[in-house]
Each structure stands twice: as structure tokens, then as C-alpha cells.
Length: 105
Image (cartoon, rainbow, N blue to C red):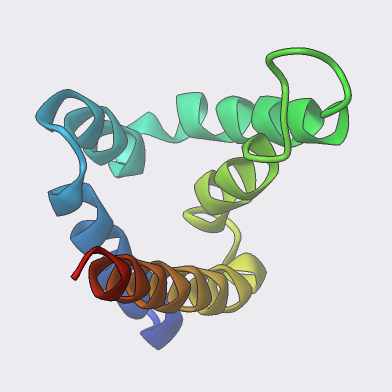
């Protein structure tokens, strides 16, 4: 049975996938499939560790939320905080885009 938090997180991730280029969206779609669990978990852990070492070149803080988002597919206690984080980021993004449009006018 799919929980309410999992449903909501999946809806948000579906919306994000639609905004991404086809290749990247397809990769994320594949990672979210249940059969990709054995790739998703190590990739999520790798991204979290990379985010912790963000002082090194190439590695950055962007890796930390991405890793947590991958792990949230398999760890129910991460779903609600990640869903809230995605909502917050989406609202900020929309607000930023609106302010850019106003400045351009």
C-alpha cells in the first residue's frame, strides 16, 4: 500500500521530471522504478558523502539533497521532510521567476 507521503512525493517528482530535458527525465524515471533500488541506494549514499565533502572541487552541496531525495524513495521517514523541502524549493523557484519577469518588463 502506498502511503500519503509517498503519493505526494511521487506527484512532485513527476512534475519535476516533466520540466527536465528528456534524457535527464528518463534517467530519473528509471532510478525511481522499484527494480532500480540496488542502484538508487548506493547512488544516494554516494551523493550524500559527496555533499559532505563539498569543499573539494566538483563535489558540492547540491549532492546532499539529491542523495536524500533518492533515499527517500526507500526510506519512509525521509519522505515527508523531502516533500516539504521540494515544496519550499518549488515556491522559491516560482517566486524568483516572477521577480525576473517583472525586472525584464
